[in-house]
Amino acid sequence: MRKELAKDFDEIYILDLGGNVRKNPKLSGTTHNVFGIQVGVSINIFVRRGSSDYTKKRRCAIYYHAIGQDWLKEEKYDFLDQKGSVSGVKWKKLKPDDRGNWITNDTDEEFQSFLPIGSKEAKAGSSVPAIFRDYSLGVSTNRDSVAYDFDAKRLAKRVEQFADDYNAELNRWQKKGKPADVDNFVSYTKIKWSRDLKLKLEREVEISFNPRCIRDAIYRPFTRLKLYTKNPVVDREGTLEFFPTKNISDENQVIYSSNHCQIPFMVFAGNLIFDAGVAGRAGQCFPRFTYSADGKHKQENITPKARTLFQIFYDDDGITAADIFHYVYAVLHHPAYRTRFAENLKRDLPRIPFVGVGRDGVSPSHKSEKTKNGTPTRHPSQIQFYPLAAVETMQGNYKPDHNPKASAKLFHEFAEAGKKLAELHVNYESAKEFKLQRQENKEVKLDWRVEAMKLTKDKSAIIYNDFLTLAGIPPDVFDYKLGNRSALEWVIDQYRVTRDEKGNIASDPNRMDDEEYIVRLVGQVITVSMETLETICSLPKIQPE
Image 1 (tube, rainbow, N blue to C red):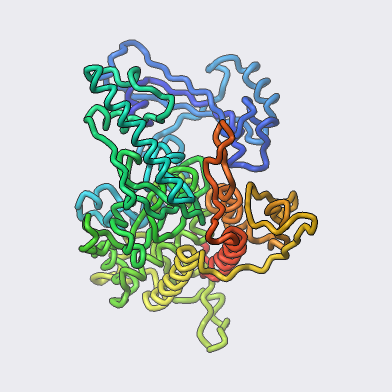
Image 2 (cartoon, rainbow, N blue to C red):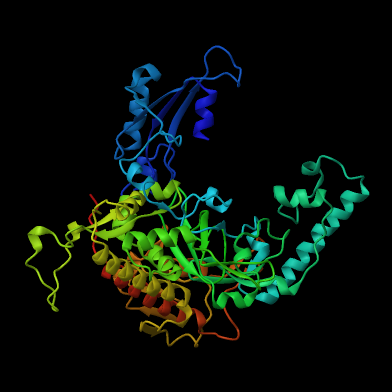
């Protein structure tokens, strides 16, 4: 979009008024934001001089000015009053990079030097290096309230009603002579119409309910729902192609990574179909394997090229595709990687560095340090991110900047940590339950049913319902975040009863066949969170130059 704007206009002015509370929690929407909202605000002026011909080639000048991020909204109002016009502002002229980014980061060049996790070119069959051959958005329904539910029977009833309503509209449209203006013809009373659903109507596609199309899916972190997978009830089937049959969940895993400017980067692994907005915003899914439509033919999704590159850099022919999959998952969790490339990860697919040890294996100033078994201690200053180009130093007469043997050991440490993280996240429902203090209200009869859980103000306890409070939540549990929320806060947010405008239950997470599922899940997610943080902390420290 930025590239197209630069083609259409002669001058562009961006006045950044800040106030992004989601990005900077120290700010207040009512105090710092000019509109009293949560997202940042900017004033953008687009100037076209002379000809209005869109085909004319233009040399657009782009100007930018940002006011103090900690300014109160009254200070921003005063600034606007004082400046009055474009001429009153001291602008900085921006020089877009080759990819059309107007505001670049000092990490852009380094980030671009790493191996792409996936690319459109590799997906199309090109020989361009990438780790995963195929990847996809998750399932996009455009009508979650129809296509998802905690209960399969309730979901089936709702989808059957949706099919009846849609087919009735299709029949009415056909009887009226198939008017071209579908937007103004269809009734919006019972159906949420999307562009794709209207196209299906124009193609006279009927909906027939099939109970076999109800599958388990990851809707939000640590939230497994039933999903009706068949188009056109869902608009885009996304990751369904990675799990064409139910039994494939036993062997395939997917790494989901967010890719959106409005939330902090998050990554999560699962062995089920993923929703497109697992993080609350769109993300991409990278599977371990891909399959034919009938699920009978499996193909490795780690490209042979990527495997070769890893084997060359680490001088280790024993590196497997599974090792690379888990290595990637560990790198995407590493604090140094996520902190340094936070802005890049909001707008681009991840790129994966080779983590390696400097040529000497140890820092000269730390050669006297020894581990218990007498081997030299690796110092963080010697552990670095290496670019894709570093592979070339392992070939011919070049002398590599890294120590291949020590680096290979480091690689396998990351792979083992990534494997542990994936097992924790995929098998969270099998985790040991963290022992919370169950404080029961003796004046209320025993009840495991949840309406809406909530944290106490100090976040030390969860008010489960009128009967039960779960106390003794470890404070560190909130450090494990997936996007804007911690894992525990995702569970509290998702496992609640919702009702429609008439007060009827629209969604109910309570299970008649397992009444203690939710209270047990709370303890399991706390365990997974704490073990995730422990595993991340055990990763070798990296201090990239």
